[in-house]
Length: 629
Image 1 (cartoon, rainbow, N blue to C red):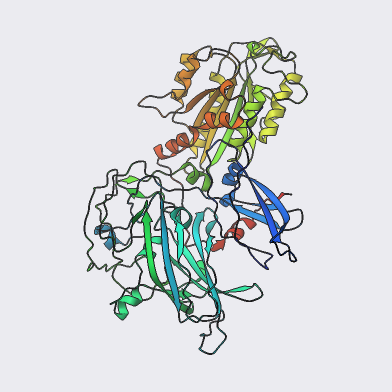
Image 2 (spheres, rainbow, N blue to C red):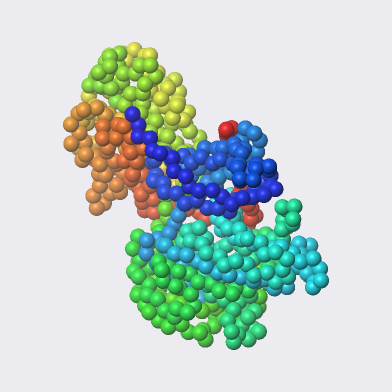
């Protein structure tokens, strides 16, 4: 029997009252490993109107598979509820590094690049940001200045994190403040958020702060918004002794509209001042009261969330330098009115608590999901062993035996591994091949399974496999893998020829019950095709001695890219997730290594030419809504 884990409650969102279209701001962190199956259940509840004990009634629920969600457009999926309505789920991988590190900023001016003498901390691991802000000179939602004696407004703000995907820029709400009641100059509660939630570890990542007025009936109206980042917030605290110009430089202008629509030409709706702001990394305060910090050498640096490919040095010089509070920049700064919404014109560059010497000689290494997010397709091929050593499929001793709907080991492996890989393919058309059987007196080392050259999705692969036993095949031998590897390599070669126009990668799953007849020739073949976008996963089934087959596990040397993995089925036969995890453990790194080795990086969309949108807007155009509970 398969291992069944006890469900774990992740928590509950905030309560949204009197709204048919709630946008919850609660973020739920989860741990997920590629190749495994992880399902979350979302239940929508509503408080009963006449219940004094806080009892709730269920409005419906939805299951979301994490692997499926990661493979969806914009990593967002909608499920339809039976009682009416839809629930949307959005997921984003955490990109926090294990070591605080400095990276360059793609939006630096030429003057700043030439004088790259100071830089803010850009990418971090564990930490929190806390800040408190207050509003001045707020106008109402239609642009009228709120005067003394008029009805005092109730105001709150939302924080949205920017996400860039092939469809454009989206803003995902990650925090909603408590409202300040009846105040002309509201000072909201102090905010404290972990950096993973606030900016996914990228302190230069844009975040959007939007100011709303709330009505007694539960409705709200947008006053305006401004764009900023964690680094800018932490350097924008108003302090005693500042003159008017200095105060203007650290004051945010709220512009009418949302995101890219809130440009410098939009009407000013008020001003925001930061009363306090600090970034704490692993218990160490990174606020402006800290004058210096040592930057450690970069180890295992991951990509910045928005700027891949970004150049960075293979070795960042360690430095511990004091701030130069008189340092000025004559170039344009990325954070200006209409960008982060600050007032003032040309102003001194923000003081940095970190100084470092950087080179720009290498490119940051993207992640597997960076390529998937930018449209990379993972092709999937399956090759199945039909040699006589499997046993007569009519008898229970055979590895191919199937009765009363119970899956055999071949079917279990196809379902486990195929379900994980298929999430990253939009067409779901997979070729299925057999080898080792005799047709018309001739041994075939490769033949088509099923009536078509490809099968649709994993269920189609299983049907194609089962259809072979309805033909006149005679199980034979020997076990030769060269032909199926060659067929998969031919598909990968076509992909390789179009590498600059279309990013795709191929995974070949080979299921066999015995030792390969010519092991040395198989290893040589794997090395010969290591330049192609192809990974070969071989799963050994049955009780054979597979000790020699482990030589195929990550066949490589100094001149070849690793492109193969071998795993035995029996240690994982009662745990499908463990099997898929072991079989696919090297695929993400192998895919990234292939593209980086060919100098092909995810193409970041030009967010300036694409409209800003909410998460729902970004998926509604080609949404496939699943029917739910």
